[in-house]
Image (cartoon, rainbow, N blue to C red; front, side, top):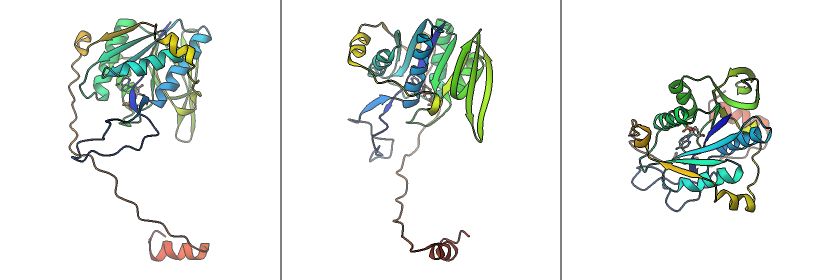
Amino acid sequence: MKVLVAVKRVVDYNVKVRVKSDNSGVDIANVKMSMNPFDEIAMEEAVRLKEKGVVTEVIAVSCGVPQCTDTLRTAMAIGADRGILVETTEELQPLAVAKLLKALVDKEQPGLVILGKQAIDDDCNQTGQMLAALADLPQATFASKVDIAEGKAQITREVDGGSEYLSLSLPAIITTDLRLNAPRYVTLPNIMKAKKKPLDIVKPEDLGVNVSPRIKTLRVVEPPQRSAGTKVPDVATLVAKLKAEAKVI
Ligand code: AMP
């Protein structure tokens, strides 16, 4: 069984992003870019399934600018067997990515597609769900445990107030939550090996997908500055302030 894993190149989670002076977006010039953390978890899970012998091939897919090849090489250093870059300089929104992934699902016929639950740059939390709808496949979002046996995926998913257990028939779409696993560190020998693994580059047109943005960003602004807090000597003063000043109780 093949597994397709979607890996997005995003601003590294340690970077404090700044809004561009013309308010047209976030300044990503000269900032460190990395694989979306939830996609690292997705890749780790796929590689673990391969190590267990459940999966035969792990394919990493990234959509975006040519530098996404770095993200794909990292995915291959974690353990993906090959990579596919859908190359475009167009701004990609979740629906466009879902359509590209759907075209690759049709082509590659994977038994499982694993995505992150959300990308930490746009925080959309939409692509996996849209892909499941477009491909008409069962989905389990926010997975914290994945077991594959006898053509089924047994999934534990994180929901408000606890866990939900689902049994999905394959092929299926899974999105990862933080607790699914702790991704391994990539080692230097694996980084070297990854350089030799196959990487295909296709364009959205080759997959018959129009990726033109459907949503227009009008303005991006910094959140308002928070005023400094005050220290209170005891609970009685806190309660008095909450009543008289904040007026919340
Ligand atoms: P989002 O819906 O944008 O929050 O993204 C959810 C997940 O979809 C991510 O964690 C990735 O697994 C996948 N994804 C989104 N955009 C891309 C992209 N440009 N390339 C590859 N995977 C993507």
